[in-house]
Amino acid sequence: MEQVQAQYEQDGFSIVAEQVAPDEVLQSALHGMVGVRDGVFDMGMAPTEHPGYDPAVLCKINNPHRSDKGLHDLVTCPEVGRKVAEVTGSRRVQVWASQLLIKPPGTAAAGHVGWHQDRQYWKMWQQAEGLFTAWIALGDVADALGPMRFVRGSHRWGFLDQGDFYGKDQQALREGIEVPADEDWQEVPALLPCGGLSVHHCLTFHGSGANIADVPRWSLAVHLRDERVEPVEGDNTYYTAHLDDPQICPVMYEA
Image 1 (tube, rainbow, N blue to C red):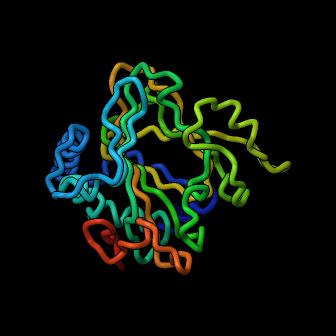
Image 2: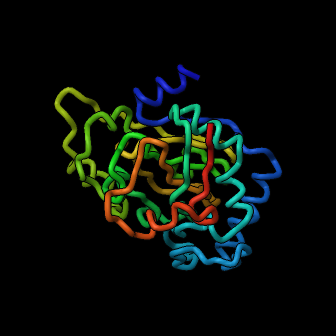
């Protein structure tokens, strides 16, 4: 356990290339992801953003875990929670947002996720340490499907506020990121089986390229905070206003 945590602290990410959730939890989540894509919300609450599914572009559906029991059960699965806590050394892990990401095949640059640090979009939280994402594969993720790619050790560069999740020109984005003189840009792909996951720090640069396979890439990105992280004082945005609601902000793990 200590070795896994030390590797995460050194690299800014950890790739767990094995199925973590039990079969029945995973199968229910796979059923739920299709239902949410198609507008079926069995928990009675719609996602906060659902653009509709267009097979020509990357589809990002915000907070589907509050809408579907299978996805909610996945983000509160004890096995998933324990694994995330093992990687990060956390005593308490709480979900505060999620994204269902569907990357259709043949979308070329329209399927890219631009290089960025999550902290650029997460300024409602005071601390960066203890703020991270668990990215759960909802299908096998091979290199041809445009996996997420992490830049090793980039969380130690500090908050640069450079890059753009929505940018499509990866090379231009990379050239605009000020890599420290004594550091290297070393990309590591997150190649995962269905039910595998990765965990990354909110300051770790990451992005993904085109899906050149013949099947979609499915994943659930679960945004998390641990016991070290508190909202900015006076912030009352959606992501901090529902921290006591277990449907919207469930606790994934508590020691």
